[in-house]
Image (cartoon, rainbow, N blue to C red):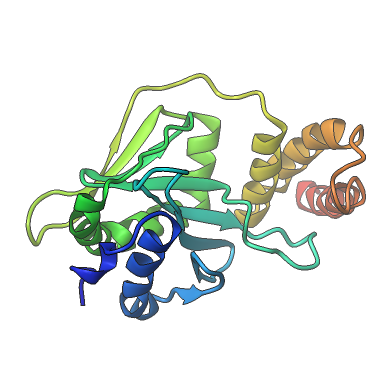
Length: 230
């Protein structure tokens, strides 16, 4: 049942809560379970998917709806599913992934439209961005925008890739690549990325469980890389 009428009857924080909860049955059918007031999780390995809302800003009515993926980290005791390693913005045109953060806020009148977009594109978006190979390509050779949209009524979805953009020299990117290469069995590249990340994290004191987590990762990857190189 679509989020019509009652989904948009309130202002500020309550506005979008009603809308996303009206999607509950549809999300459940597609493997998403509610894990928070505004979050739904489709748990899978090595990449999990989420959909969540950002409520209106103070004095506003517009909301933001994001799809996201999180990469499984076997060196963390319990993953909280709040990092959002990559996210897309739901919009009337489709689902946008922007390499440089570009929030897409939705006005109340766009509620029914984006619900239809979600039904059309959810599976295609999740299937594409849950693939570690696609994520590696995106983080290694980024483009400014990727748009997932339906070709036509009743037709399949397509992914439209924008222009190449400069790769961020980011410890977070190295961290994600160390996990993605590990999950694809490329232990040599995983180890190289983990060592780059360690150069950053070894100097930090405010990261929970670090640098011990990355030390464990490097030890494990070193053993695997050595085994597979002989």
